[in-house]
Length: 271
Length: 271
Image 1: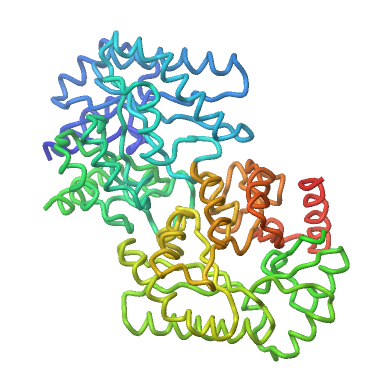
Image 2 (image 1 turned 90 degrees about the vertical axis):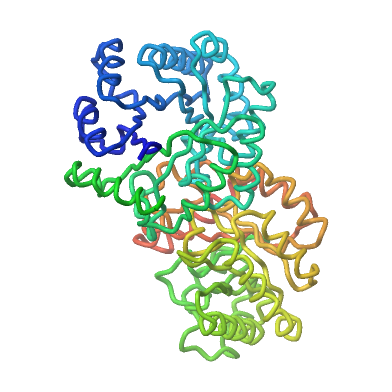
């Protein structure tokens, strides 16, 4: 349990105060906070509350969404990422996960260029604040409007193009990359380059009835999570395994029972 | 219109007789027949009906689905592909499109091996019949239960592993591969190696509400179909552009009007 982290979005019906009670009660040792959970809260207070909960804050989700068809849109995205860096710094989160963005109608090539430009624009602030940024490659089914970065290889290419900044890495989410025939090799490369910053787990259900909100609890689907996890650990990664599940099904039930299922399926996975 | 082909599945509510009337009436010059449209029909008669319609038969859809967790399942898949080759030969179809298959719980590595083995097992019959086989890489969102071959690179690797047989090629469907950062390079490679056997078009809608049956008519989505089509043509490909759309929305309307929309959107695309 010392490496189990849960995202606040996973138990979306719970507010942050409830997460800070319900997670540690079950031995969950890490929390990743989604920015909507911070709305209307004083960030110094949140930082103290997290410390009081005994949990470690693993990351802030999410920055990114850099591409836009207008310069004003790109500027607004950079401003929002600068704000996320301030928020992460204020609550003590060492990392921000970047969902890079895409715009239907904008070419993927152009989106990828704007993503690299956007990251370059906010990197100095990230360095200043001591907050790392992690590019999360998203499943290709999100290439229309969520991310033009759809493989670990592409994430590495952006890191390379920006000169391999120390504060820039990659977040590996099994849901997005499990199908990739290059996965093991790209994970190894992330280890060698010090870019492996975060590891997210959930499962792929058959059938999947919703592109966004039908992710499975570990064990409900076909992903060989343990194998991917072992590849990640073999690089020397010792960080948290973060449970990030978007699911209308799970959100509609009792969240305490859902958390019990999360801890038991996690325990089975790493038995 | 001399290169416009429509799949029978695109106008699923129409039976084959209706397709053979409604397609050529609108100047559509090619037809790809899905095997369910052949059920209960005498194949020599179908061959004559197609000839009478004035259309060219472009391919038979679909073979494949090779992986299975049992030897009996793999044998049944091979038998079914041998039957498809007989059917293609009987109706005069020069090509069978392969949706390679995947089984939840079977590793992707194992599925890929079984796919290569399955293709190897049916290739002699394909050569004998003079029917080509085309591997269709499927979008990664189908890696659970439809295809463990999700990129053109992987399709090329299977062709390479089998010794680049003359009768084995690749079918490029924009819906499945539009997101791939290597797409142009892999299409070029398919041209150089003589593997580019078929080109399918439709569009990716935002939002997509169903993983299987919410494909768009050309122009309804974000794929730069014309650019991909130009890359295909630049290899020397002069075959049909095949409209393959699975859509609850379009299937629920008048199919004659849908065919009118197909021809007009095709005309706009290639104006």
